[in-house]
Structure formats: C-alpha cells, structure tokens
Length: 168
Image (cartoon, rainbow, N blue to C red; front, top):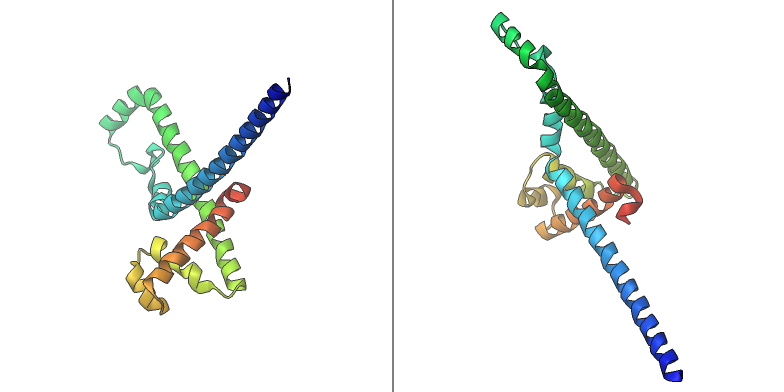
C-alpha cells in the first residue's frame, strides 16, 4: 500500500509539472501570435486604409447606361449578398483601421511622455512611410541594429494597445 501511495504522489507531481509546462508554452505561443498579428496589421495598414476608402459597396458609384441597368435588375437579388459581403468587409476594415490609428496615437503619447519619440518614429517611418532601416538609421543618427530593436520593442508595446490584456 505504501508503494502505491508514493507512486500516486509521483504521478500527481508529474502531471502537475506537465500542466504547468504546457501553460507556459501556451502563453509563449500566444505572445508570439500577438506579436505576429501586430506586425501584420502594421505591414498592411496602408493597404487596409485604401481598401475601406476605395471599396465599392453599392451601384451609386458606377455609371451605367440603360442596357446595363436592365441587366443589373435581373441579377440584382443574387448580387445583394455579394454587395453586403463587400460592405461588411469595408465596415470591419474601417473599424480595424480606426482601432490601429487610436493605438498608434496612444503609443505616440506614451513615447512622448517617456521622452522616447524616436522609438515611435521608427514604427511610423518603417511601416507607414515605407522608409528602409538604413535610411531611418541615418535620419535618427543611430545604428541599424538599434532601429530594428526599437521596432520590435514598439511592436510589443503596440500589441498591448491593440489586443489589451491578451498581449501580456
């Protein structure tokens, strides 16, 4: 009996340790995913902005002659779903772009308070203005490696503004 009790205790400890290790790996994976998603949003920010501004989600923007209007009426019911899909995509994109703008503004304000505006400028120049690292390094008078480090630091900080507590 004594042997069995020790054996059960060892199993419980092993299972507890395995669960803790699994939780740590899950949190690390989650942080990596948030970093990756923040980076993707920054990479695609300009395209997303153009998308919601230029997406045509109704026929008011299109010049149609009488023949085109007649053919549109016959297929209109089938295309309403497609137009609604475009409209939904445009709306979701608009919300996300607005959220990114607000997060960037908050990050900029934080950097101003900490007297680290040059770190924020790296994000703005690299992702929003498409300036390469070497030119940013010259502009900010520091090494390219420093620019890359600041970029990653700002992506991490921006992730908190974008995803909240999930980024921690």
